[in-house]
Length: 541
View: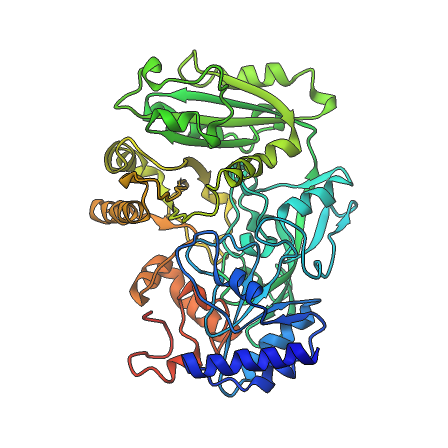
């Protein structure tokens, strides 16, 4: 313990010299946490990076908490600090643009898994507690969704709404929204939470829900970590399906593709037998993508050729749908699927179907991750761009981006699927287009150093800027999901009518502006006071 304190003191003193921090080392040494406060170079290195690999910021220390009280102690120390330091909560490190990083404070490692998904560290403070009677689970904010699923399946239950990738932390997805193909029916993950425990920017531990501390509850959901750190979430559950009928069909006509997607999500109010459980889709602009890792669904012995299907302008669209079923409904699944497919206008020869266990479907992306890791293609820069596009302009987006800017190389999957706005609680901090239906368009590209210019980080980043400029010039009012901005005006434009409330809640729950500074929305008060160019409220970073 004495050695650890000595190392911590040395590390903080080094930071004081190199970056001008004014933190008294004793402030951190006096915390008295039950967890582990580390300055080990390997811990600091992990916390310095994220999945995006687009930025790097080295914290002065890393906390592995043993409880919510450990987190509260750290935040209280930062809040009351004479010199000031920041606190950033990190889940599984799957941010793209350094949102969970800080170079002027401490990173809290909320998850018990290391970057490779292996168990490590102290273990999560509280294992999931499942209530079969109430159909909910209380889970630690750093718990990964894959572990939530495994815990709830022991009781024959599962959460209702998911993300495509399950190795993300509960607190991380709830701080954004948490979306996948179930969102049209159940809403995003933030619409399926009953209650939260949150450590505010003052170091208070507050329980919040619709009935208790409701302002904080709605602020934190989709709040980008600005108002508090989620230490517990009460997640809504349903009986877990046994198996999934997984179907993909192809379109050469974008209007037919979107018409069918919009029809399918309009069925959300129907009985389970009269709707699909999951509706997604993706864009195929080159022959490689349709048979790549995201599309490994198609048989490698019978690869799909764009040219053989007669696509319009070299672009195809794939509708991806599933139907969950139980042992008790296995006899009716075929006719239910057939009835729904009859209503659609896909290319008749392009139906691809498989059946698999429910867990295998939910965890499908992890299998692809393992393949990419084995080839050294996972830990590369990821200049992802996620946009919410209003339904009224999705055809213009198709023409300008899918058939225009992207050309015939994509360097990764391009997801596209619609959602119902009435499934999103507008009291949350998330902003969406102001239309009843809007689309997620997710360009999930990887930058590779393989000699191909169209796959370089510079090329893909420039293309992202080109897409955003096109939307701006064409008057397509997109909203970024997992947003990343660097100027005051951009953040104000992003939040629109919600900005004034967002700002007021920040001043109420994190008045020193010390939480989640990697989002670059607000400048910490201790830095703003020393910056002559800053008003002290919003960061012109």
